[in-house]
Length: 407
Ligand code: PMP
Image 1 (tube, protein in one colour):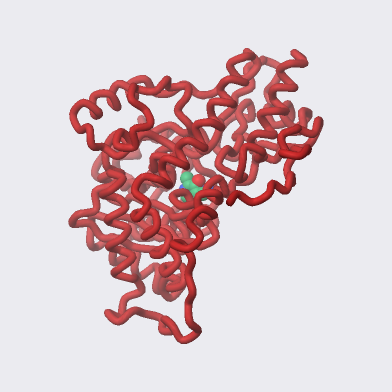
Image 2: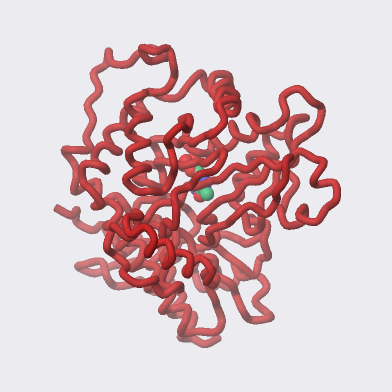
């Protein structure tokens, strides 16, 4: 029962497949609506009716802000997918992973000393790492830019450092690893995209603080529910204090909805992952085909070491989640691995402002400098929009037209 297409993007015609020339394709914004069709096909099992008297208090029966049932379900989802170790780990929830990321910075900063933690992330980085840290900047912590610039600094080893590692990365999809190491370095792994939709899963994440979000797993960004898997109890308790002081707990309605949705995810086996993977893959294939027909633009290379590692892991443990999906039997052609974003580079010497190049072709992208990078790069969003006729598809059409002109 797919809804009738409303042709509300850049397409027209009876089946909405005709591209409207010169239509502005907005590949900037990032709502993960590509999963909407999956939820339309699971109306009954995902629906929720909440009586007015239900769950009115601040806390649950055990006086905590966290639903133990939801926590159990999250652990089951991770063990089914194989993307995180959760045994003997603490789990904390928050209003999206956005709140969790900041709670982690507070919790990892020194409590009782005057030493300000330096917060870094390797370029290109997720802009909110910088924006949020700068906004909340205090004597506890301060944003200090690109992690690479701290790698060989002599004062780095004597300073409290906190490194954000977004893996797979937003914007370029790379499976990033920590740049800084040592006794004074704390890490926050942002694993928002560490789901089979966006990346093969080489091994379960097992870091000190690993952050996930419902937004990129089920697509329910508006529910505002994220969580972190945490090794150390002290860090967990400090993050809980942050939640209490920052928002007096976590929305119980959001937890209830997340519970319903994750239950459906588990009941349907690998269905949501199959659907999400296929959708993202087909979008990515169209983009790669388009870009490879021109030397004006390029996409990042995949890390070949990673692909080898993936093959090895497959042989050692054939039950890892991605393989169990039976979607890719060989190590995939690296360039055809889908990603939530395309990190596009303008290759021509004169195209220093890639945003302007695309804007002239009616494609709205996000500028590279927002990610701490050069403006020779832009990000196009591929997880937004429901059908093939989405803004990403519109952007591909416009790119094809631009490439065909050969200007
Ligand atoms: N981390 C990354 C890398 C993201 O791209 C996003 C969403 N753009 C988030 C975290 C935030 O997600 P949310 O607050 O919806 O959980």
